[in-house]
Image (cartoon, rainbow, N blue to C red; front, top):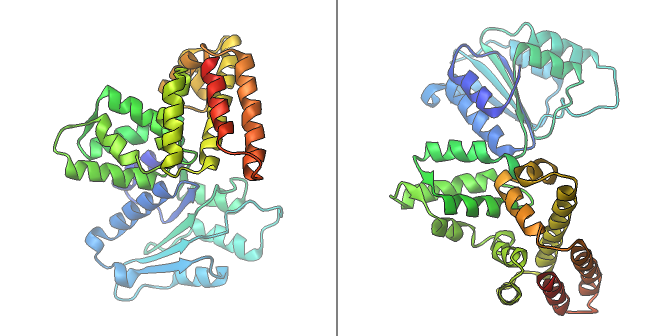
Length: 342
């Protein structure tokens, strides 16, 4: 059975476990949590894990794997095999399976009552493969999809409940904006930082000031205030923040990438709104949190499309000229001034 993380965790907590598992996908945070929960279920309190758990990095020969599955456990009541980093479920151009794979498919349907097989695949598994279909039929498959800014709400609510905290409106607005700046969201990082907040703050609500302290060390998030000033077309504040970023050592390549992304999003929002897509409906096509998409739409309404196009061309030129040493940070300043003058 193919399930998402919350469904996987619920299945682990409930009834009798199947004997084969695939923990696959591109989000390592959910895979690690699922593996931890599964091993905790198989070995309550860690009892018997040392004798019963066999960890394998990469794939082992299928004949050896089949032999290990059938081998009766010694000094334990279980035989648990964990294959970390398997390649058996990767996309394959070959449509034919080997005799060994066919044997493993049959084994999935006839697992010994004492053996459990756990595959960990840090990629999106190929659902067309016979091996995948057999495992999904006989066991449990976790599909761990990477989180993006627009679908982080469920994780956030779950985390806040786990640490017995709430978040006020200003804090949530800042969090949504900060996460929207991240090209890739590291749930492991966010998880640890929220645990720290829970540890050092006794107040029931997380404040915006606390979140600013958490994210201040991330360059892509610290630029957030600069982009907000540009959205408000506050030229004086935007230039001051740009100079502060440069003085603090933020690389021009980081600033350039984030400025370009922001202008592109404003332009996309402008085009979409002209087609009747407005407010939170912008979230899906822009791949943004609905709160941020609505905010971006309001900002985009104040820009002329010609100005956004001119700023984009300036940033494209800046990318080449700055990298080849033919110009300095004045090109970034020119783009910011163009946007704020509107």
